[in-house]
Length: 356
Ligand code: NAD
Image (cartoon, rainbow, N blue to C red; front, top):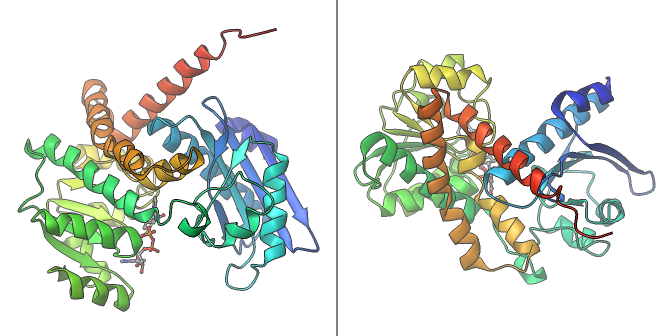
């Protein structure tokens, strides 16, 4: 793989390979863009098939974090760490402490926390070596479960979508199909049912289906049938790439608004949704609540402030929809335009000379 070429293509600043044979650590830190502040992004642990796969993943994910952070108004850039290993077998104190030392060595250029394959408790070990970790368990000074904040942000974001399409913020009486009732989906359904929406859910995990039906009055469909549900809002809260050639023609919704990352399989699917008159809430904007919480934790966590900042996702989406209409572009593209404008204008501010 031509790593420098790949970095130049998407504007990455730095890629750091970290190895500690004794601890069994093989990790890569990707720093995409630090125009707005130090890079921030979770640490993913995954049994990649090849080194190249790990590099491609860290480049893709770190770029995504630049956009997510900038859109939410955070003063952080985009970064990510990937650990090459099997989260079921390869975790150890030594591995997470070694990882913490590499993060510390970057001297505040990079902050990390949980992602797929890692848990808050793993970073207790890392925190012995560095204070540049966030999303620690509450009893270790962290902010706790971020999926509650993410779900709150998705609920607020849905209100912006509904206002745009139906002219009212209320979800009462709307038919909402939620794909995946894991951590985020579960809390989201709570908000929706409390507001009087008619909710249909699906999940491949029977235990999660039972958990939700024992608490809320919701309809359940088989996992694949969720795309055919006649509804006002389709809310992907499970997997990426669920908006694709196969599913778009089946969807009967007017709005797509959910927590899953990378919902559009390809860029062009944003155009397809636009031409079908389906309003799409860009994923990295609507699902930013968890990141907002983690960023807040780095300043000394204040729950009220984190929820207030997350509630602003509603106004942010309204602004993005206005750009989309003004420029006749899909909402995802409009979000990117807004982010790139912020990065450009704030970068210019830092050109002011401060001291010699
Ligand atoms: P989770 O693993 O707790 O929940 C995902 C759920 O989706 C699980 O219950 C799983 O069984 C289910 N699922 C998987 N495949 C499915 C399918 N084909 N059909 C129906 N259900 C299926 O994860 P989560 O933390 O709730 O996150 C959900 C999504 O939101 C993920 O894409 C995640 O990357 C994204 N996200 C989460 C957060 C957060 O704070 N947790 C923040 C931003 C984005």
